[in-house]
Length: 246
Image (cartoon, rainbow, N blue to C red; front, side, top):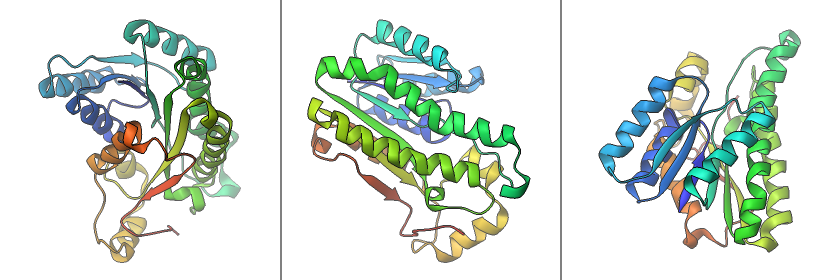
């Protein structure tokens, strides 16, 4: 099986690429602009399995035409894909009253429109195969998060998108699910998670720790397998038992 992953150059996306390589699957992954990080992901994957087909594609997920061109190129390169993982996301935090149009639009375009463009580009491929896995990465912010109205709205929107896809395309052998992620130590959380929220997490999370990117990758891998074939339209929380953030 080959898997297409957005935002695979670092963090959770990189962990997913490496898990797929470890399991012997091919990976096409995208990155926004950090070619050095993308090269490092490929290097690490090759260290796991030198024969693993892994390739990086620069792509701006906000631009529908660019997404379509990259997906077409990846299908040409890999011939077939069994799963797509929408992991790429950004955060631009601000109070709602102070949020600019640019902050709103860029987050919504990247985190919600982008996954739709990617999925739309793969649907006919999956339909022709009578099989496909769609996995969207969300966040506890999907239920609301102070200072992140744009990010929260984009992640909540993924729920409606995913549940609709599950209903429309389940009869064609295509499943769609969400992995809702709690606090995982990545570059994004280092940059955008306030110290106050970090302290709240460590105090109230029943497991008293942050999650790891590898733990998220393990669930994503499972959802790509045949064993997960009857899981469809689900929002699966991976947050150590904490169900909300302030």
